[in-house]
Image 1 (spheres, rainbow, N blue to C red):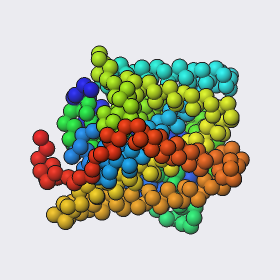
Image 2: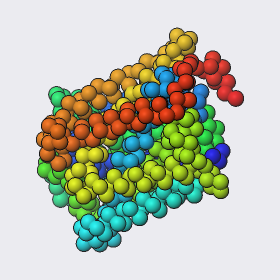
Image 3: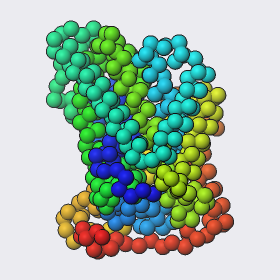
Length: 484
């Protein structure tokens, strides 16, 4: 691939856009308020903690191994090929599950922003436009990382500008007492994540943690980034910090302006909550917020393809997947085959689930939480294991390379268990139906896991080269910052 194709700022922007901030907030604010009321901003703060700890793991693992396969490569080095392969599989499948839904949201909100509501209600037209959007964004990924970065820079500026405009107008109307809802004056006490307490806090944290997902896309571009040993990892860490500020600020504005009653009553609208609020808060300028959600999903449609395709490339280079997936386009110097494969499978998944129901598509997104928690937690453990001989050399190493990533992994493992328990009940799914006596999201998650294990065993029998790799430990020179 093309070395030094992008810089730190480009990597940071890609990491931010991969999380789809506007869309993530729109989808989560309502349900979180139902659970914890005005303490929603506090949940955003608490959810940030495990993300920052895992971002630390990404930073230190990238220092010793600048591989675009990230979790796959690092876990393989630290814990062996079996665990590494499953980590890579989880990352690849997250792209497949979410790309179609993101494209659908991007198209829907763009149509709403331009007043084409009837087009948005036409399922065939909307799905056709979504597939075309996936193809276009995939082509941008293939054409080159520099082009992708430039597109992302424009999209993040549009998104942040729209979000800030909404937040400023909403808070102004709260203090001017000109709102149309039962507004609530903001309070510092809202930052207390334990204000509501009880089991509802756990459910809210489950939602909060996963709106941060995607920041590691910056690290997946490590082989194409300047100062690859440090810049991508720093971009990942700073992405989580900027997301924290953005999420807390907008959560304050939404809760203060709309009040808890309205948000609770409309929680089932999910991402459309911003569409409802925009019309009330900004009048004829509601298209600004609609455009923010659209550009958010549009940007994430592209950036979500990156981790999945780069992971497939890395796995193929190490003979963990067929060699065909490691092909680099001779002109654009990007992994074209793996990129188009991810997009193709994502399109099939999106269209197939839409034939079942729109709720089935949402259920597949819920299953994402299982895969995300798994590979994030696996990365945290891998960091401590790989650096195990150096953790007692200093307090810095012990806290940031050992204890921090392990605590982050432990928190995510706990949330993973809670997710499984919650998803087991069909009543907690979007579809509200039972698949084999379980909720559809859990069935989808189990199905993906079983498929991964079967494919791994089959490939192990067909091509045992990768499984000859043995775990190792970090090189002392790299640990102490003497990167070559």
